[in-house]
Length: 316
Image 1: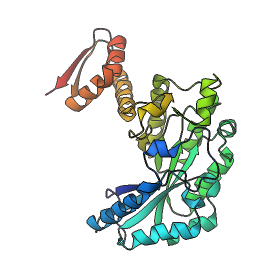
Image 2: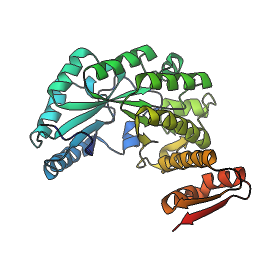
Image 3: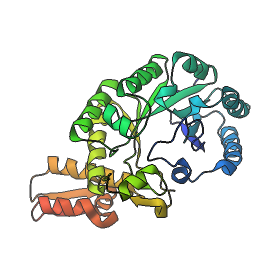
């Protein structure tokens, strides 16, 4: 028996940093990004068991993040899932994150047998030149083929994109948007690239061979993706890397602990610009008013600059 369609699904994350990854992308350090390490896996699994038992009868997923799940040894994969199935009921399922090169019909059949219902693909970019520069190990066509296979086998499809990868251009950005419109995944994550200490990308940046996005560029690009995705029924479920990343490990790039709020403020700013003429009085609900004023009031200042003598008031 499945949970009713549209019912909120509770999600419990289990991080498998770098596990199953055939190589290391030039920008990646999942241990630092997730804040997890090998010693914390047992605690995460125990927490997942408790989560499954506590929410019996409700739609819920245990989500495996941070590694290439479908590239893990099959016996190990099954051991992880078997342990959690013992605490599951018919309303529970699994979500996995994986690399497009490790998707085929055989592995997807296996996923169905083990109650995996959502597959997120770390596509990162659909441009061949950008993928090559980041050493991703596949082409844009292969990423698209993997995504279509996931969809054809009946899974909920998630796509992860990474604005600001080495070699990106306005043309590649436009191409990614067209591919997203063509594919129309169910879920979308947007992780603007940041430079993490100790990665090969950090060396490129230190040598002046890589220039990261500014914070404003990253916000603008993610807002563009969000505006494209929403009318297509694509749900944007994450904006920016997890906030548990230690800021001391960030050398450069558009890192902000509340990046998602900055994008939402940008989207609100764009909407207000479209709806109100210059100089008009704008009265907002408290939540939206506070969003514009938060984090230095970046979007409030833009609104005041664009709408000369703009009157912005909070609705009480």
